[in-house]
Every structure is written in structure tokens, then in C-alpha cells.
Image (tube, rainbow, N blue to C red; front, side, top):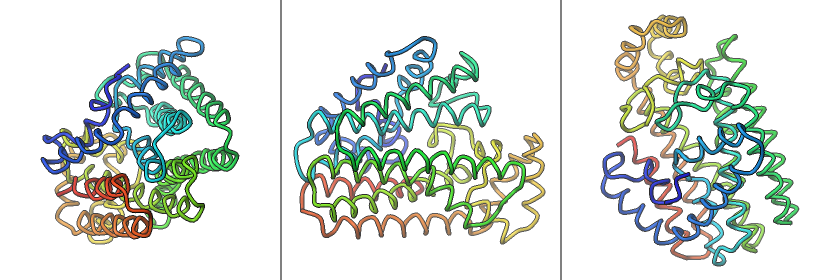
Length: 343
């Protein structure tokens, strides 16, 4: 498994992907939480090796490929506003990544994905059943570790979050057979599948550090808006970015049957885009090449970026009343840098 936290965060902060300012921010984040994140990485490595093979192999394969680790970082920074992270904080940060990793193993089966994080998806190496069971194994470890921390509000919030994640996946899966191009459904899925885990991470980081409950809830609202901005930016990059920036082939979401907001907005402006969508869903790669330029000719990507910026603004508003600290300022900077990925 990749033990170096700097590598784990590389896909967020390298100069090649999001510029020199964000690369400098990565250095600042690592100065603040690097030793703590290294401990989290050890917990993840130990956890993914615990259990029956090949379920453990699938889990270690995914976790060893790195990833942004943005959820553990957000949890650690939220906790650091109030106290120096301790063992329980590291455990919860690992829980956040274990839950995220489990959803990725499950998503890859649902989506028939071939790659994840620049390497073969676990399902292509060990099969769909092992990928599902590897994800299940990670979830059971996450629940056990969270329970052992002994904070009832944190644990009950995790149970609610897991239910929300599953319900979001079900709603998204429905759209593959009954195409739903509504903005309402998009945000339902984004809140459930992305924002909910950010909410849990930042709220739990504050709670385990003994923050006043009002502050913990404010950090949860920060997490929700951070998660929404993160998702909106990812969706823009799927149409307006490059594979070097996103780490995946363009139009992956559409090929997997997922409707994202740039597509919804583009169809409002140009009904002919629907023909490309139908062709891509039928496997026509030529239409995939034509879709990006067609969407970029509308104002869809600009509208979605503006929404991401609005989410970031709301996130920063939630941080403003909290105790002044370097960790609070870094959380704000991370939020701004995520939106800056689209230039």
C-alpha cells in the first residue's frame, strides 16, 4: 500500500494538474496534517490486510493506488481547529476513507468499470463478486472501528450516512432505464452520494475533538457545500477537462449511464445533444468525441462552475464564525482550490 501521504494527495495538488498555487497549498496541508495522515495510512494498510483473501486483496489493491484522501484530510483539519488529533481522530479519518473506498469497489461493479485510479479495477482482476465482498469487508471494518471509538453521535451519524449513500446509488441506478434529466434528481444524487460523507467527516472531526455542537454542525454544513462543489467541478471536468487532469477518460460518467448537471443544462440550450447522448449510451464512440464540443458551445459548463463557486462561498460562510486557527484557514483554502481546478 502507498504509505506516503504526499503521494496520496498528489492527485489534488500537483503543479501539473492544478497549478503552482494549489501545489503550495499541498505543502501547507502536509505540514499541518502530514504526520497524522501517515498514521491514517497505516491504519488503512492494516485494515485492508485483515480478513479473508481475496476480499482483502481487492481492498488493498484499491487503497494502495492512492487517491485524494480529501475526506480524511477534511476530518483531520476540522478536528485540529479544536485540539491536536489523537488516536480516535486517526481512527475516524480512516473510517471516512474506508467507506469511500467501499463505495468505489461497489460502483465499479455497477458501472462495469475497467480502471480505477490509473490501474485495473479490482473487478477486472478478481471478478465482480470479490469486488463487492471486498467493499463489504471495508464497510464492516469501518463500522467496527467507528463503534470502538465510543462516540454515540458519531456512530449514529455514520449509520444514517451509509443509508443515504445506498439510497443515492439506487436513485442513480434508476436513471439508466428511465432517463431523468431533472436538476432536482441530480442534486438528490450529489447530496446523497458525495456531500453526505463530507458532512460526516467534518462533523465527526469536530465532535471527536470536543467542539461545541453548534460548531460541529457548522462544519457539517461546510462539508456538505465542499462536497457539492467537489462534485460539480468533477462533472465540469468530465466535459471540459482532459484525461491528464481528471485521471480518467472523458465522458466516463455518460458512458456509465450517469446524468450530470452540465449535460442537463446543455440539453436545455441545444436539444440536438440528445441524439449524441442516445448514441453514446448505445456504444457509439464517434458521438462521444462530438459531445464535448457540443456541450462547450453552450454555457452549461460556465453555469455549473458558477454553482460550484456559490457552494464554495456558502462553505466559507460557515467557517467564518469558527475559532481562528491555521487549520480553519487551510480548510478554507482547500475549498477554494477545489473550485480553481476548472480555471
